[in-house]
Length: 281
Image 1: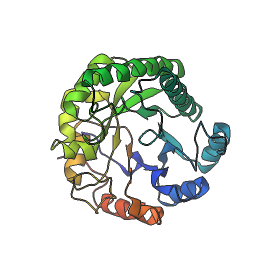
Image 2: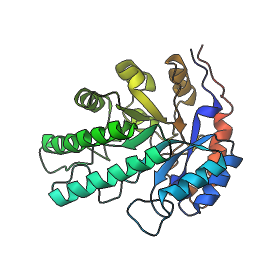
Image 3: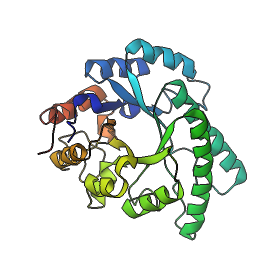
């Protein structure tokens, strides 16, 4: 059984959106992280806004910091780039958007790129949404192979998407998108929201679990550790028993953390460090 270590933890700039990217890098260093997940959206970096600096500038900043990029995640929850868009113009824009994100991942030497299958529409046959989502996903896999970046398809909660939102839909995705470059990003919030465990996902997918979002919640909410009610030790035991050696991002998403992201992440780390390093018995 693998020992789960602090070095596997990854910060994320999502909750630092009211601070500069320089502040985020400094905070990440001070907190002792070795890596971070790069959330691509303004005010930090976006491939579609000219007001942000180009990716080469970010690459130099990150190299100077000594940090590694564990995953690149373009903004997609609130953007106009829905993977299931019906209009041809929107679909082409979506391909261009996610291709730019994968280029950023390659330029930053990130092993993973995170995206989903799309939100779909609740007022149409669900297979129509699935078909459009898969069509775009298959195009993204071709780009992933070209850039040598693996895609971790992220599961969401059922109130976010009718498509990739749990264990059974993950099986559908992994069956259809069968590629060495295709795997899952498993988030503990939708896992617990479905009343399942990380072990259920390892039983079903094994090494295809590429990346983890290790979040507290009640059971969701994307909270810092200690603010929710999730079974942290059980999560760590499941990761250890399955020899998980990948990165685990702390994806804080609650707006109450925006004013003090550094302090909010630190509180979560203080809780995690009571358990880490962790080896399952």
